[in-house]
Length: 267
Image (cartoon, rainbow, N blue to C red; front, top):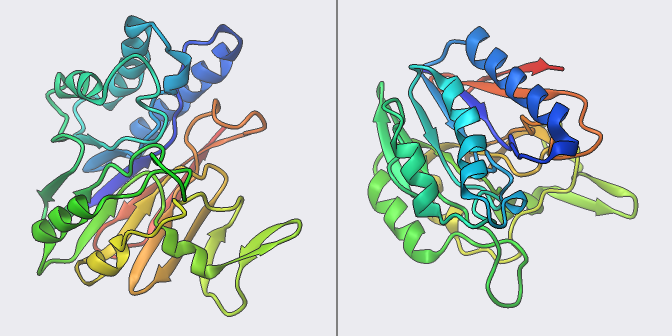
């Protein structure tokens, strides 16, 4: 089974970002048209919510601009931290997603059994309410639910924000960051990972039932490594609206049988 992963499109209506928006949609269309897959996964921040403080119609248009590109290919979607920073609730956003006959999305947290694979989708939240972390955590009840769903299997997890366990492998330097000496990885650590600062035990609980975990959120990074027996796959941003200096859109295609990825790039 092959999955095309599209994280962080950050589609928005801002006039001064018109060409970046147009370029983002053009490149996503190319990625879908030129790389036929069994499933498309939108890995969060499909729309840049903060640009829609009061305008529901424009939000929905930007949402549909992206989802319309899927054609007849099945797709599934998880939330990022920016999707619902707007006038629309997650339930209202999902109602648009549910209007597509090729959507396999089943709420904020769900499991798909597809072509012999178990695919776990978790909403990693937005911002933490309280002290101790900036980004939200995956709560204990969600972790318990996920364990119940995949126990005894080997699933692939999709969520927007990477688990805090990644920081055990990162060395923070005065002028940046790098993987610690001896860590075996492929790809690029283009920026410091931004997980929650509080570890709720998601990986510790789910690791026996996961073979891979796929993340977005950190747009400049595109690395892969084994973390406590689970292959972490960090995907770069697919849109041009996220970072001002972004020169290209990248997408990963995951072969679920081999867990190998192919990166396709468009400018």
